[in-house]
Length: 551
Image (tube, rainbow, N blue to C red; front, side):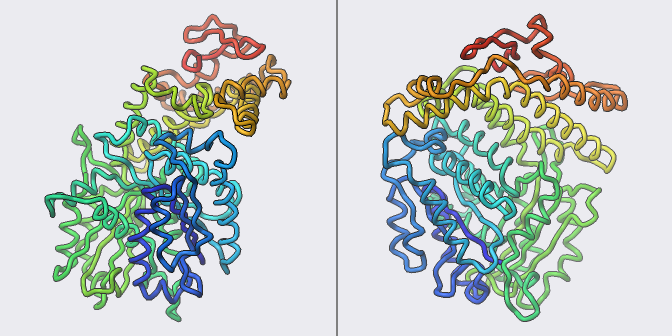
């Protein structure tokens, strides 16, 4: 099983350098041919919008030179610019070149299994271009695995656009990937500062690379009897840690020590674990994977007999999972030294704190209209951002992890998942009804924007609207007729749930609590615009009744 790695943006490529240095020292990687070709070159693509970092990678002999894709101008930490590309001719070639090189790299694989994408959440290239590539890879290879290794910026602030960028990128990752391994720069910095006074970016990258190698490189547990590695570690991790499609954010704790017992190493590792939220409630873990490397005496499994209860209590594993802990071992450590390492990957609800922070900051900035003009300038529109960005991000990111956080037993878990899933489905249907009204207009605008890019206009958006309206004469005055039928069907489903629970199902959208059932029945074309929370909006040649939050 061959794996292709995509390193996108400055952060993704800088983490990739120590990652491949460690991987090259692993004998199973050299012999298995899952990460390397027969000639020793990496199965990797390195993409950036500027040549600075790529030039450093070009000096190594293990990278295929044609797999280095770069532009001449950065993306200015702007998600919209990274996603849509530049307006000037000859500059918007990165996406096409990357997909062509990826196709050729996959064709060199005997048995292609999937891609691992490394990128940041805040940079323009890592977030915007990473989201675009994630979407296109899923579209081109829908049956293959896709795992994202994303790196969250420091909450203190690296860029004024980082909250928007992170929110939009996480929405795309939740939509298109099978698993998202999320690494927080703040946590890495906090752990390293306990050991040293000053911490460099290289030391942070080394620490992140060590954690990723801990769960992705070959292990003896998944090695065949003949001793050959088939490279199933990344995909077995997805199977083990992401049993529910709505809960796919994974976090890794890693520790490497020498002359310490397994019990002492596990105790030190658990000291860095965040166990309780700000209200004192314990976080929950759907599933946990423990990878022990350097187990030359085969002693880890015997040590886990006493450590298993301690790990379950620390991670607060959900009681309905009969096998909440999976264990892999390897005789050799990553660096080939006599030291040992532990990597614990978990689908843990502590990520909710970061997501809540991200959502609140983004909502505050969005309501104030802060920095939105940078997104309108490069092809994003307000309607598009609301329908395809903010609302799906709030639902897909906030509601799904919260279902893990609220689980306590089998019964409550089932009800929580049903409620969250029903809310997602119902809002999805409502979004279809509303989005169908705008979709033709948006297609017109996007077509015009593309034409504006080809013609090299400075104001691609304004010129795009004009060209699009001239070339795409599509009527937008008639809303879809099936919206009422969809509303009735979903209302029946929600009515049954309300009768059983005897209370209303509520979801949080842009800080307002609204009834899901009312959401579906509000602002439909035949209901007029007399309902509170609705208002008329003129779009192109038609006037429609839409919810205020879409106005």
